[in-house]
Length: 553
Image (cartoon, rainbow, N blue to C red; front, side):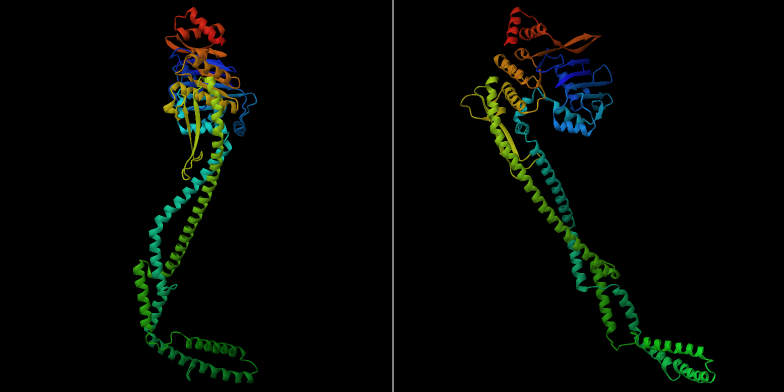
């Protein structure tokens, strides 16, 4: 409940403080005195979007403060606890707008985001605008009313979570599909290159080795002759080996006579002999010795041509063909993995859609069941609102599976008839403005009975009605005030007469400008104001009597 509201520099309001009370609080005043300003200011304190046109001419800042009782909404309490905001002594909401375009929000003097202020404000106060009856013809708003009645908060949370998961996965799939499509031509090119590479199968450093081999092969006869000469020098009659062998034989004989005086040179020459043998062995086994294949150069030339021709066809350096083969093979493998990953993501998306569909079905069942109960409860309100002949029906239409939203895949339609034997039709075509207001009030009464008590604000909900109908609306608003704090801005004397607390909004001329003022009226003052609303500026005894009668009934 709102305990008090303070407005500073809001258009024509200089500095205004009001205490509000339980039950039905009515605000009256002539047209143009600023009744809507009061509600706009209240909206600011509750987290409405900043409207800097509300800043008046009494300073550079507009300030609105609202004092409320302790919260009972668990989600809001948890939100404030998470922000370390103590609410044991009540809730103080404040909004400051500056001419420099800045907007600040506070809860119990703690700076908060506008989103936080809006959430807390919505848990305390629900403002019903003058034209909100038209919201009944909007399926989105109808869905909100039905879900509120059905207490579908948990299901809606589950649907929203599942819906967000589906959208996230859809984005992943779409991104990967775009990548796949963009890479499709590239992959085709890679496959073409791989086909050609696999036909040739280049080896590592093959061209370098072939060129080296060709150079050697071209001089094979000359090289073979030279090697034969070397071998003869190493192992012939006049070779190093032969001379070294003779030398060893002589030294060994001398060494025997001298009793080992030549051991060291003998060992040295023996090592030389072994190394000569080793050199001979490797040279004799050399691949450079012609194998007698006269076609080898032709084979090499053919392979070199094949490799260079391949390099031209795939536009790659011939020396890098082997590396290209390895890289492209890896790329194709990665592409296959990505394609497989895309299929996995698509399957995951299908699974998430199935989960979303299941939750949406649960929500649909809850709405369908709740709609029947809602219709009954609304029908029970009609006699109190002079709608005895009216019929109201809530239709829950399930959309296609691919038409999911974060609130499910249902469309909610409110249809009605206001006269006997009249077919049901859309509210926009069936109901007048006054009837729409009463339909809306019936819904609000039903929802208020099902919801946590809060402050309900109605801006001219009685628009378009009068007489007994307006009196009936006033009585229903008063009834609504038994459980909730109700604030009503009205032009109807019948509604005003039912107020337990009556506030008069007026203009006063001060210091050359008009200033909006508001004051609570006592019983006699309230009677005079209601009489004025009945008769105009000239208040007659008959008007006073009529006002008194309205207040008593």
